[in-house]
Length: 301
Image 1: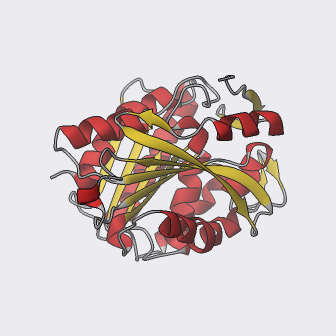
Image 2: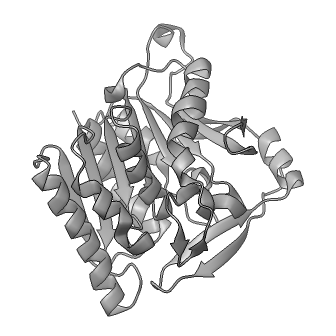
């Protein structure tokens, strides 16, 4: 099998953070699709080529099902679903633009075997490569320069296209208590935006190093007047996200401000977990390290 080659492009921002965009040739996409499914972490990773009428593009949905999903004794069982943005970076190092992945399949499989969380389905929603920034930005922005953002359509994309497709293909449990959404960086920003724009759809939200600074912290202003929060919210950030002291401090302060907003909205320790990791950077490795804590917080027995 030929390894899929990703060509990372970086747009340096005034904040000191980097927004990654991935470009994969049609030939590589075809090769990757032909290689599915495969075993990951004791479960199975399945790739679905998915076309969106809303965004008028095509991407992969990377669906990880737990061990035993297809066994006869589980034929009537329905599963919670954890939807995660930037699907290329979740399951395999070969498709991650940094060469480091979240290890979602390995972590979920291990925690299933240890009885720490129930078996569930994970859906990695690939970003749109060169259109990633536009799809993950819900506001006009001068830095990065995006005058025609498309993130306002992302809630509709999830609710009207992605989730119904997954429900048709897999045995999905119904109700917000069985649906989780998460992401990192801009993928965390758009996850927070979806929680506000589509209340009652997701019972839990994971926000890893969310880009709260975008558009002069517009998302924080919108959060202040919102009350219909998911049942549980996990926010993770490192103290070395940018590598520059003043920006690092501001990044953590933005998360602290979000925490204050959520606390004032009534989210107590049972519903809100904020994890500030000393020395952690803005990277897949850092998000992978905190992922087990998020799973325990959301689903721990």
